[in-house]
Length: 130
Image 1 (cartoon, rainbow, N blue to C red):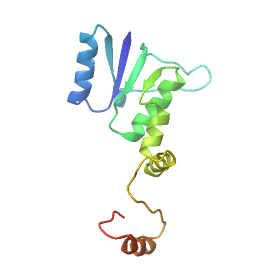
Image 2 (cartoon, helix red, strand yellow):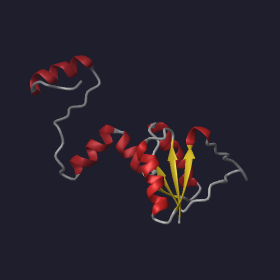
Image 3 (cartoon, one colour):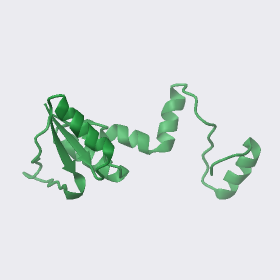
Image 4 (tube, one colour):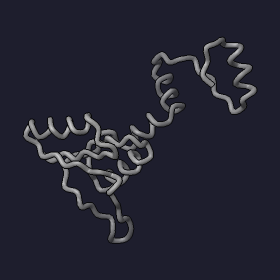
């Protein structure tokens, strides 16, 4: 099995993933996304990567989401896929999913006005994050 490790900052975690994959008998290939490119279009949707699975480890949320979408478009299995990244990157969406499944969350109020936010914070009590 060939494991791709997609990253934009090579931290100890990415190094350990690559090292442990190799120790376990897998081939691990680093994918430095700042040098990465994708050609998309008629006859141009291709990948130069050879991997069975790609582990998404980019620290930039935008870069992680974008490259996961590209990898998935090339039919790679991606750990931390685009759907998961979208759900986790949007705090309101995540909160809504948790609440839908009766998972306790901090009391949250959504408003689009600074004044309304301050008024509501006074009503529910401090400390509050606005």
